[in-house]
Image 1 (cartoon, rainbow, N blue to C red):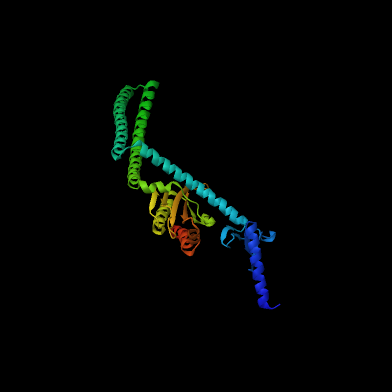
Image 2 (spheres, rainbow, N blue to C red):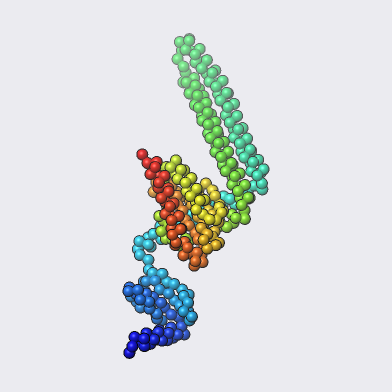
Length: 333
């Protein structure tokens, strides 16, 4: 039998198998260790763990079964899912705060009135403490004068006199401490209401876009765990967080949907080459610092997934850790 005849016979035989398999319910396609493509009604046991495809009657791929993951990949997936669960929790908490904010206040004026009312209440408490200090100081002066008079007469102070002096002085110290506490509360209140006011304005200005941040689709990259960068203290975390926010804005192709104190989310991808980025500042369970984590999302159709595996997105992911690590290295003693 000539080579041409053998090839023709093989092609006819393969076609016959394909037709029979299609009629039976599906054609399987796989590649062996030598790179040879095989077709059949089932994948042999020795190739079950490698990537293979299922074809329809027209020979078009309708389903792809990925290769079995290694133990290292499985562990990486678990770590990634833990990070994503934290991120989803953080996003849900932020959205709940946003809902409460919008339910509490009809407009900016309501928010400002609430702030001014709280500050007025604290100022009233501070004024009361000052008045109490004036009263206590006047009383202490009387006790001290009586004690001095007793000493001039050569008399020892009674236990009651000593107790009056001590208790009055402690009351004054306590009132001063209360004033300092109220002043701290005032500063914290002003900061909180300033944030709420800015957030309120953002939510009203971008309400249509903010609705798109309700769901964060999972990324196609199991090694996104590599984009979690740890920082050790508040100052370092603050500097790295600023770098992370700038990096996300620079490389995302979709607009920002939600930006809060510990999370930034850009709008979901719509087109083939859209890149959506989420960065989060997560508490570090291993210490007092934090973990700054970036997730990348591309369009969910097949071409979008392939694009997300490509060199452009890979460079963005690798560059995130490199840029934050470079900042850490530059600040190291």
